[in-house]
Length: 136
Image (tube, rainbow, N blue to C red):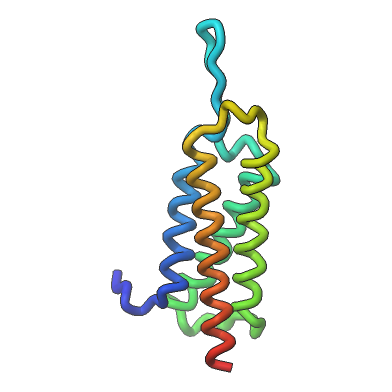
């Protein structure tokens, strides 16, 4: 795959989607007591786990369709504003899970990676917004 056809903002969004996908399978919360342990991953949280993941997949799909299928007609909407909005929503939803989650002492690496990828989606959306504003 030729990465030179992608802008920096697009690479950030694609990388953040990959990181979020990986983090969805890792533990978000875990608890061990009396010889028993329980853990949850991102797929156990529909609003603050699955929705941000689906948002990232939609953002990445638009980027990949634009790069590999340029003949496909996409709606004429302000994609920079859309990406910025979607990225911020994804980051805020994961932040909500981080702040209000199950038990403050039981957060695991998957949740922190998901939050970092949410920040990446918001940052990539912001850069896309800046690029769109500069070309307009």
